[in-house]
Length: 155
Image (cartoon, rainbow, N blue to C red; front, side, top):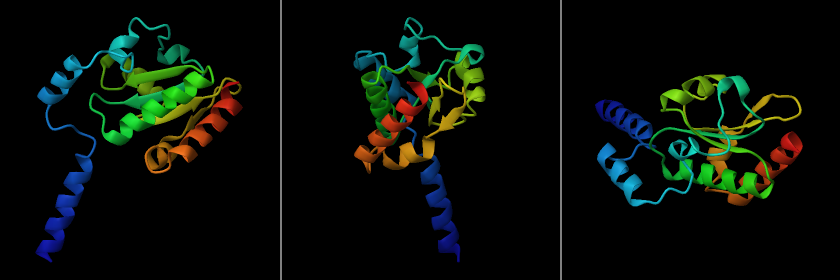
């Protein structure tokens, strides 16, 4: 019985830490060693698309925290590629930054997520579960669904 409880607690602890890098120091070091490619909100301050909760445009919204796991990175990278190929707006939003907290509330994004805001209806479609389930495990299905939704909602 004690082994079962211990294993349960261990599994729970591991699942909470799955999207966390080992230390802030390692993350900061990696960020300074890597050239900025406009994939973070630090670069968005000068980017052409600046979004606030009051004027959230139609487009693909990828929400993430300061630290991203392999799956988080795959979801964002593929969504950005697909959005670019279809000339759709793509917004890379770090919800850990104070200026993005209100926008995250608008989309009800309390953790990493992928959302499409329709140009037609203004409604927000949550693709988070599908994206995180398939971005790595079934990339073609992920891309196909994303293309279909973007074409239907944004063009």
